[in-house]
Image 1 (cartoon, rainbow, N blue to C red):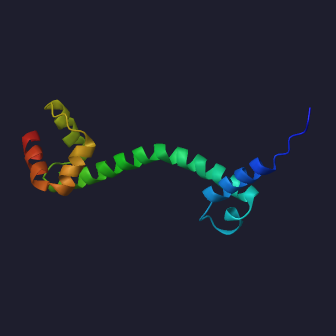
Image 2 (cartoon, helix red, strand yellow):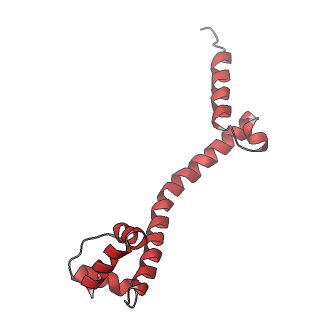
Image 3 (cartoon, rainbow, N blue to C red):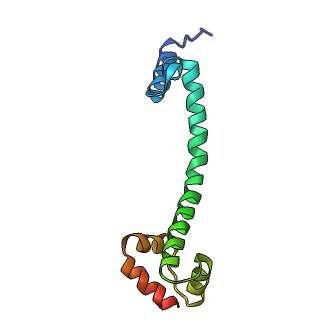
Length: 115
């Protein structure tokens, strides 16, 4: 069987790797081996941080809610959330934090209902 030379496909592959590594610094954007290595690591970080982003946003909402709750006269975030659940208010932290930041009058009405 005849030998197949991979010149065209190798060039396509190399071009694709370097195009995806465009904007990286130093040899990572010019040299194929370093570019490929950088892309593999970037993919790992992107995969992990897509999951971390959810935790980051949740903690941001909790910080915003805690500040708004203490401003509205409640003792703490945890007591506010527990009384919300006892009273059957089914709003999640994202919605509550949005109300607290962008619509404080609505949040004040919710907080008054919880007391």
